[in-house]
Length: 409
Ligand code: NIG
Ligand code: FE
Image 1 (cartoon, rainbow, N blue to C red):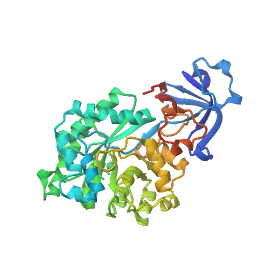
Image 2 (cartoon, rainbow, N blue to C red):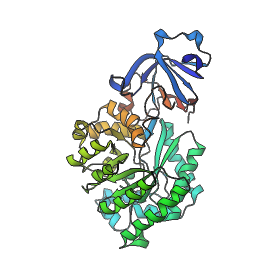
Image 3 (cartoon, helix red, strand yellow):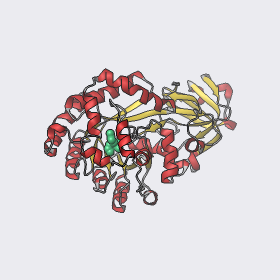
């Protein structure tokens, strides 16, 4: 198979993250890996490689490590304004919920976002996307949720799609209409959910702007019954389902999302054992967001041991947003997942590759170095894959490869 490759990396150690490779990190040493047409088409040990048969480009990786491209499976990176003054308030003792109930929080970002058009949203969001891409992100999930009306929700999704066209990155877009109750619907949450179900979702689907729906199931946002209405409509349209659940209290939103075969249930600090069992039963990924845990100075840990016991795949994501996680670094999240949540470095890497792909419904295509997968790959100047979760702040990427082509940022 190496004969027909457009490009072959030789002398490379692979952290494949492939479940079929029963080694930590799915490690394969001293390998060659070849690509054609944007996909991985050959992997094999150097000792059996006949170099003379390769007609494509050969890149000597000189013993460096290659991993799948990193996948950030939960971001709100399209927004306007900033909430640094709320950070000051919170440091002086006001809680995230108090700020939200007094009209700040998400609604303050909604005010700023509604004033911006698509181009302005792209301009404001590009540096955040660039920061993620520069440290190895090749796929990113981007949510709406700061418009809370049809026009601005769609503008946010248009901005996400626009960036996907401009840059070497895959974007999975989620409609998070049910993020907060907009002022126009005060005391009429059910009326607002009507708008989400009857107008926002159909309009977003009609324009091809959306891959999944998301909800915020919480006392300061929407009830399980309201979230379920959104899930039902999403299911009718064949969209993926995801949810912000069990972040500040246990509303049993994870079990609800799982019943709708959600791709992912996110946050999960208040998740109980029944919720963990439901995720396991339905193959729903648990997406952990250590940045929000850290930034809100949360003390309740997500039930990591139970998630392990029930073999629920764990993803790790930035939750990049202006209020609870203004932290544009997936590498930092890997480190926090280990230090704050006690994930192993292998679990952290699986959380931003294989399991993150599954959280986006793309597990058959992305997240592992395996023949047939898309060739989004990173070549790192590191001695061991554990360094990726251990060290933070040094850019150790030698080559960023997107769809089989070098695409450094
Ligand atoms: O994932 N939990 C709800 N949504 C975001 C925060 C959004 C914001 O504060 O702007 C989150 O933490
Ligand atoms: Fe979020």
